Image: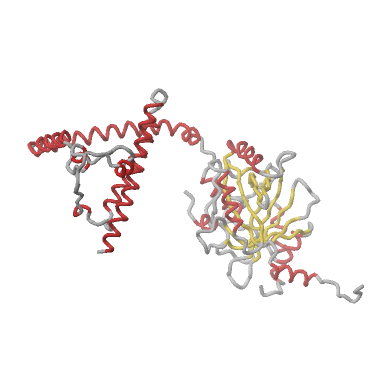
Length: 222
Length: 249
């Protein structure tokens, strides 16, 4: 009976996990959209392809708020943090998410790869971020369906703009946003090929591609 | 010398193989025609012809190969003609040439095309040389016109057949690239989501050149009267937090 064995501290297990490279801190992402008229067909196809559809597709209804933390002295790019809360399940924890810059290095990579850290938090999160000095950049709500296939998560959701008065949220476009993402530790690039193969099965309904929104955001609106 | 001999042998071997393949393909085609002439259809027939042409192409490739020694300089001469049945020859030729007789040998060892073909060729050559340049040009132009006309008919037909399935899916596009871009930028950078802004408003909003003590949702000018209480509450909080911001980062 090893009574004098020291208890394993949290920092020890964390550093062990870091060394073993098992923390899923990378997100592999493909995005696309499907028109409202064709979303039923897409849902049928996904129900056929995906795993978790025994009792109908899983729905979700989330509100996401994006905060940014600026350095008052330097004019560097601010740190953006996203807080997501579930509107249909009020007792689920809030999700605090950091999303890094996408890795633009390799043009041949089939998916967008960016670092992503998710932490579950309590409802005090918004106050805490405000105390830290974060400001709300924008917010929106997403409502739709979530499918899983192995490690891959596919969401088909409509994005709504939250209007400040008590009007119901209005959709920002006539399409549903389709996202295929995998959270994985660093270095598991083979998953990108699997994702690309799955994305090809959804063609020509949806064209899932890697989209660089920063570049699109600076382009002028036609 | 030895190398040339070896090359010659190798080339002959290759040619022999090709010719055998060609022969078996022709045999197969003839057998098919004879046995299945009621049930055969045009595409199958064309397939067989394609096989034949493939073999012929292979044969011509071997002959054109630069490594092949110049076969023109090699001559085959019958050294002895006989009327008796030669078992060796019969075996080599699978029973078709039982003896090296004088009526078979000129046909088998012939290098010029057969007389009828030769006559036809001469007639055509003569006709071609008597044509004037203008008539020749006109004929060529007509020929090209006819061929392109046929080509158009065929390609239109193909489009009609193959385009049916593709067109019915194409008439109703199921996704719009513009919408994809709009959604992704909205989710990523908040374009079109900041309150008081038109949907898909002017680009690059808010983030560049913002003052520090400004409000949380940066608006370019029109502070709409529907600005609610919630942001302003945050405003005061932020102001307080900024003023006593102890950390450098």
